[in-house]
Amino acid sequence: MPDFSLLCQDPNRQETARQLAAKYGFVYGQQAQHGLILSLETEGLQLKNLDEPKTGGVMVDFISAAMSWRREHGGGLKEAVAKAVGVKGNYHLTVFDATAGLGRDAFILANLGCSVTMTERSPIVAALLEDGLQRGIADPAVQRMRLLNVPALQAMQNWQDEQPDVVYLDPMFPHRKKSAAVKKDMRLFQLLLGPDLDADGLLAPARQLAKKRVVVKRPANAPYLAECKPSIEMKGKANRFDIYLNP
Image (cartoon, rainbow, N blue to C red; front, side):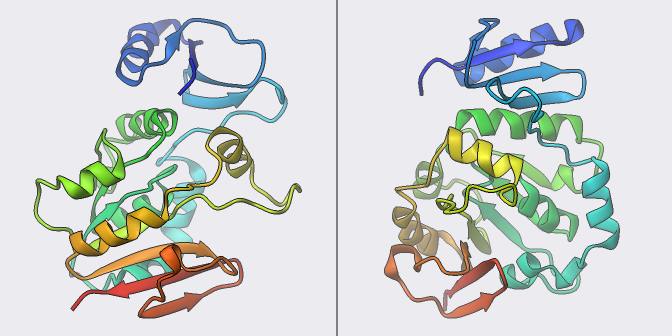
């Protein structure tokens, strides 16, 4: 990763900013002129594009109004990700989310009682996740989430805990459209990360690790991961869940 700037706009959080920079290898306090930066502000850590100053930043906020609304008015057990993972009643699954992103699907599952372990290949996104977890720690769902600071493949190959019921994969896929319909966070992520070119290599170790199933979230028309046909396909308008059942 090239040198990546982390700035602190909140005088009361400078030590936190220094610790984040040291942990993830960012350059602290160096003002960039263009491109993407991390900015620690009173509201939380944000990813910003200096070339689009009016766009605003992207942050992980599990206690935001939007997440609270989804918790209260969303589909609960009828959420597509919950159905794909196999959440039922009071049986609480253990889930390894190997490509956590902003943690939204992980939060939905944790809110339904699952214990969710996450990894994220980008240290920048991992820092956003860590900040969101720290700010939301009083929430019972957030308390069922944890972040491992290791790459997904390394985590799966050297798994130390009890075997997870489910491994969840949602690798980045290139967006063909360059329109306002592509959400701000996805546009920034594409600029930051690009597609997961090594995503095919995650399927086999995921199937070895998962006790019950591997769930892969894909765009509706995307090819199967590693060209491997799933046991079950759950198709929606924009996305598809490919489910690989283990005996």
